Image (cartoon, rainbow, N blue to C red; front, top):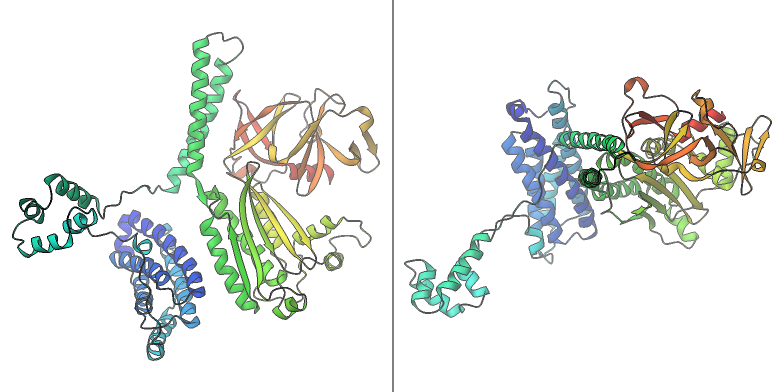
Length: 609
């Protein structure tokens, strides 16, 4: 395995290499997909060649021989392809994919060593890959078609390579200050600077030469518009800004009270609050990352799974520029993998079956992301066979998930696929079928305070929507009062708040109190009973009821009063209280008191089960 002990004294250099190499590999992987569609496009080959070349150079400088060796061999293969000495075939594409996978494993091993010098890493055998490259070079050189000609490299493809400063004569030609003939005459007798000769001959003026020299000085220079910052430093900054928000709220509570008649103080407090809010928004935006890299990985996944399943599937991507908190993006990768793998393996029918139904032989999976109501929605839609309601119901009864005579709506039946261990696959393959996918998706998304929704039409296809908060550090919350206690309920979970009439409340045996709201009967959860608090209002028609939704269920939460909506900085309860049911975190309110953030799904499970 890579020996990086000689550079471990300067871990920052290695970390920078790890970040750059990760970006390079993700970029190359997406470009290989494009090359597979356009194997004779030398522009794409060039765009793959450059990152591999950069990785080879950096690995050589850092003494990472394995990464350097693999990068060098891939670079050789790509160099031959861009010079049109070999033809890009499906075998070459597979070699390139294999090379990227090997480089990713080697990179992960280095990252593991950086985190823990004593870590034991697996031996990664890349010799078979090198042998394949050698064979491909020999074989393709013998069989290359003479009609295959390289495409000229466009300026866009080489824009990331530092440019050489332009020559003075070239600049003067481009600006029209001299002609080619005049330049040729001046160059023939050049014994001193070209600019001086052109001025002496009266061909151009000193001002025009000075202007050309300024242009020359800036050619090839590229100013850096970004600064790389360690994520730990960013996390610390987010935490400090959270503390600033809390401190500002405390100041407003003390100095901004009704008793304070000092106009100047109130004005300054208002200005401070605005600045703090702007700082908070800016810091949170620094954590926002486009979904592009995540979506690119899904393109590779669709390709690999469709080949294994013997199907032809196309992935359509939109909204990849949509930004999401870095932490959320890191967590959403696995759920997306499960859903897309299911769409290709279970959803899309075999080609002969699609033809029989009058569908195109090529299946389609759409991946889309967009903003909606202060959240991000990611949709995964396929044009496959959809979900079979009767089959799901039969499997659920077999597994004992529901009673045989249970009365369920269509949506409740479809939602059974999210139950632990549920699978309708006839046989287990290395792609899917073990029933460990969709329940993991639901749990992971809900852990991110998100929701998963499913809609399907049998024979037409299935759409799964994932609704996620923009960030995990701050939520919009409604502060409610029960007795002398204040609790926070996430606004995402609240549908509406009402003060019911007495006739809308009824008590049903074995089901407790129910609220009749527009013909629907919802159970009522009394927070004071759950948390042993003495309430100020016992009767629902004197108090307030929040209609909330969580984990696919709805209920009414009885509270004394609503104190208002505000952005809440989430604080962890620590390891000791991490598994407390019904509570997802805490927050420090403006009066300095700690308030619990309630988990609506957990509250319903506690109260109604």
